[in-house]
Length: 237
Image (cartoon, rainbow, N blue to C red; front, side):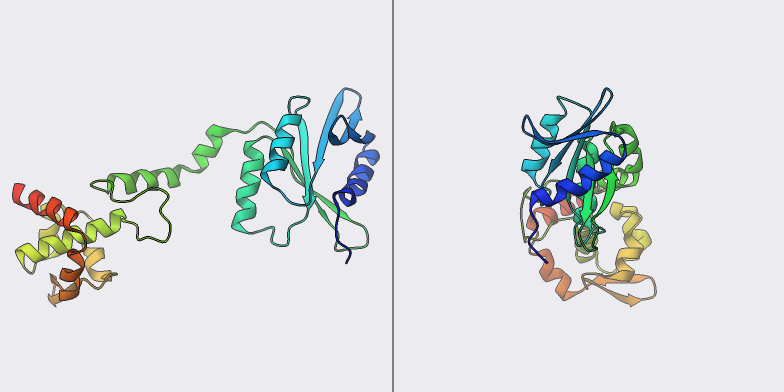
């Protein structure tokens, strides 16, 4: 298969708009393609890959018309997470997206997205569960123990902090039941944390009673700030 060029995208898109009754022109005042029918102006920017340069170029064309498309060859993995994220960005910018497949003798067009106003309120409504989860995570942390932008470093989550709190209380008070721990403020997830024992910090000594393991005690040494915080909290109670 020959190497694709941007110009290869032009002809199949040109044919499509011709069939729809548009007058089509290439390279008009820096626009890769224009399609005109009565007062309706469509601009299409062609690229071999979707990148920042293409998005900037396309958003500049929105000064001229609301009907701006970007056109690229159809990606090999159109159902990947990255592709879904890219499509969200295109919608957010109120652009249209055309993909062209060259796997058959006749190139096939797919109008993935049409340019239209982005409904931000609807988008936020659809993400309500994610927002609730984010706020819950924020409220579950006692302080900021992570550095934003860190890569390949262990992150302190609300779940882990909850585990540290439980381990800290068990180390101070000895074996306890989930119910008594919850009374001290370890939260409603206490029974689940002890039963699942994700970090292997806990051990059941008898029915409904748990203690912190030696491994758990060693792990607590890595978090002196949090241990100090929860010890003080325990003493206040």
